[in-house]
Image 1: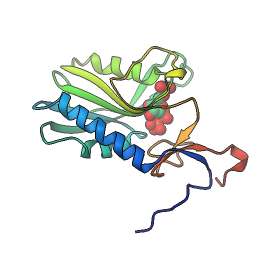
Image 2 (image 1 turned 180 degrees about the horizontal axis):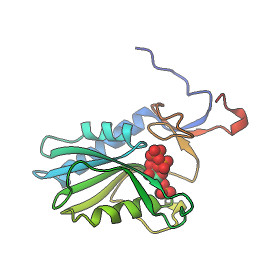
Image 3 (image 1 turned 90 degrees about the horizontal axis):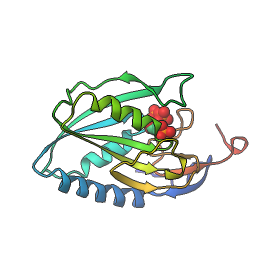
Image 4 (image 1 turned 30 degrees about the vertical axis):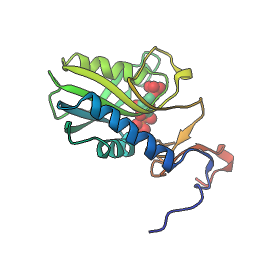
Length: 187
Ligand code: PRP
């Protein structure tokens, strides 16, 4: 199997490499396994950004947790982005009522998406509701939001890879990197 030794030509620098991501995700998985030991857990991935983190995190959960998986996809209402109200594009198939629910995200930036999404889910009366995000940009909040589980706090730089995109590109990169300026990119 060939894996590129160098970053994608559009990447200015690698912020988090495969080793750092893998180590941290295994630690998060161990922490979540301890916290939900002998319980049923509905893990809800928020598409699309969470896809790679979600699949690694699931594989880092121990058998002491009875895990079920579901997905949601959301978007901001056009023109009301500052209110942070979301539109549900893809909803759960599972009923979260009375269940322990863990929402998995790739990044919390302004906090508007997760504030609105957790309000939406809370209205369905889960037994418990927590958020696990791979990346957190605490300096960018427009509303206070504190996820319980955080992989890495990062500075306010535009990052892609490991599920995160720019214009739907770069999600496949196995690391989190900072994009070059537009004029220096190949795409
Ligand atoms: C990203 C991310 C969060 C949201 C965080 O999703 O996955 O859902 O933005 O930003 P916020 O804290 O400022 O609200 P995006 O809309 O880029 O969709 P994607 O997951 O499909 O890439």
